[in-house]
Image (tube, rainbow, N blue to C red; front, side):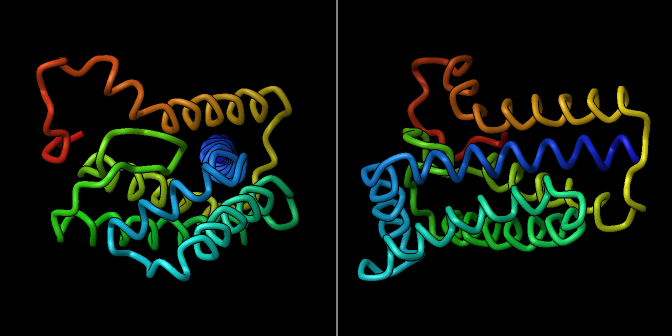
Length: 180
């Protein structure tokens, strides 16, 4: 179980750091996400940039909490809450049928789909081992391997839209009904 906690720690930290970085790398990136949140009718236009910036900062803070041993458990709790909120936003957009691109990790052209909802729910579930298991104290080699495995999984999660686009049939234009 300790290795699972460390792998989940690496997974969540990488996903949240990549997500925060993709939003904070430029004013244009932050504005693109803010505009997409307005188009999805999740936030009002006048609050969009502030809410988007707060989201990016929250992602970065949660990632740091996950990586610091003394705050690891708080990081897992914060990650679970943050991902539940994000999953709720995706669910709301899907229920409305608003087909807008997901700018979670940058400039994806794919609209939000059930795949994005499943991703956020699964990532939120990845926080659970860190909440229920005792703090890990495995051997260094095992810890590093688990952390790297989780980090690699995190990188794959952040590239999911690109991977789907790469392998999707080119004639398919309606991505809103994708299962995964």
